[in-house]
Image (cartoon, rainbow, N blue to C red; front, side, top):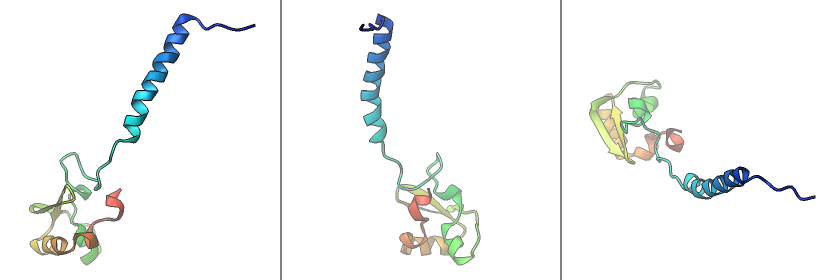
Length: 99
């Protein structure tokens, strides 16, 4: 005996398959930002990334000492910290973009 699905069940299956074909490739192809940043584009929530290395603690950065690198705004507690970062951002940026 062959069981036949009602038309509404067939419609649900077809719609689900079409949605899967359209959504899955889009979702897997979505890129993520290289740097983890706030909705305002500020990296590491505005903390001075250089201070983690020079002062061994978290220090809130200031927007007046900012620098844009890797499509993110980086804030620093001082001009000296900013200049150290500008000279060698790879050294001071968090691993894996801060993720």
